Amino acid sequence: MTAAACSERVIMAARGWIGTPYGHQASLKGIGCDCLGLVRGIWRELHGREPEIPPAYSPDWAEASGRETLAEAAGRHLRPIAIAEAGPGDVLLFAYQPHAPARHCAVQVAERRMIHAINAHPVAEVSIVPWWRNRLRFAFRFPAEI
Image (cartoon, rainbow, N blue to C red):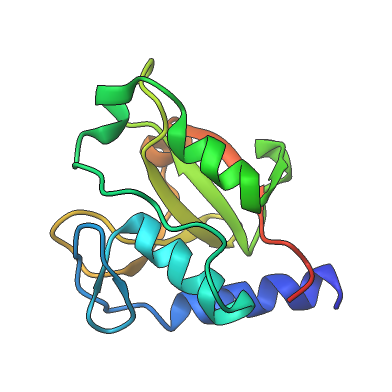
């Protein structure tokens, strides 16, 4: 499968989650998900079974651990890419604070658009405004063997 076809499948899968209510630690399309649950659900749609189930986590898990746990997990299953290379279909990781670990993920769907799940809001496609761009820490690509 070509890279373009792969990214289109990722985008189509991500758009299928739009409107799913926010649910901490959930990953059920139309029922509830958080940002990680969204990416997990896309993985399942494209690859089948998840390669790793995350342990239970609190809303402040990243700050509590101080480690780049989310980036480490993403690196085990997705292909790390330079932030400058990120494009449609890629997974973006954000840190809310300048010296904190990344704790939010989204799927880029266009040059300046992403789909994500954020506390108290349903999954939505939004603009990657400067606030988000300034917090972008990592980018990953889904494997092409979909």
